[in-house]
Image 1 (tube, helix red, strand yellow):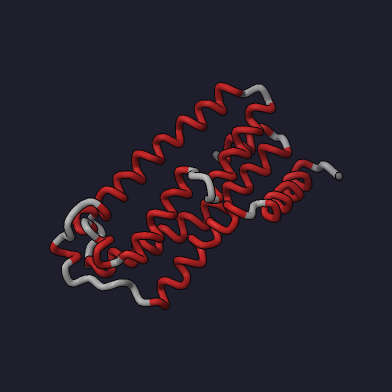
Image 2 (spheres, rainbow, N blue to C red):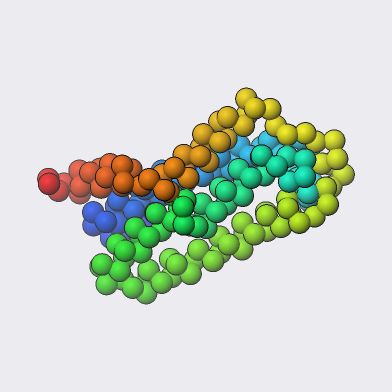
Amino acid sequence: YMILGLATATVGGVTAALLHLLHHALIKGGMFMAVGQIAAQAGSTRMDDFKGAVRVMPVSVLALVLGGAGLIGVPGTVGFITKVALVEALWAEGLWFVAVAAILSSLLAVAYVWRIVEVVWFHPPSHAMTGAVEAPWTQQVFTWLLIGSSLVFGVWATQTTTVATWAAEQLLGIRP
C-alpha cells in the first residue's frame, strides 16, 4: 500500500503512504506486543499453543484482535482511513483497476487475521494455556497505547491527515 501511494507521486498518494506508515507502526507494534504476551504465557510461539487464549488472557487477545481489525481496514481504525485515502488517490489518477486490486487485497488480510482469531477465540484452551494468566499491566500499558492510538487516529483522523498532507506537499516540492 505504501509503495502504491508513493508511486502515484501525487499529494493524495504520498499522504496515503505516510498515513499507512503510521498505521503499520502502531498496529504491528501493538500486535507483536500482544503476541509476545501470549507467547510468554504459553511458553511457546506455536499457534496451536495459543488455542483458547481468550479464556485466560482476554485483554491481550482483545488487543490482538483490534490490531487485526486495523490491518483489515475495518471502519473506526486508522487502517480504514489509510485504505480509503489510497483508493481515492488511485481513483483520482484514473488507476481504478489498481484501486480495485488494493480493495480486493484487503480480503487477504481478512483471511490471515481470521486464522488468528479462530485459534485464540474458538478453541478450548491448549495444554500450554492451562497455566497462563493475563500479562502484567506494565506490559499491557504499552500494548494498549499503540492499539488505542490506532483507534483514536481512526476516529479522529483530521490532525494526522493534515500533518501527512503537509509532509507530502513538502516531499513533492509543492508550496501551498
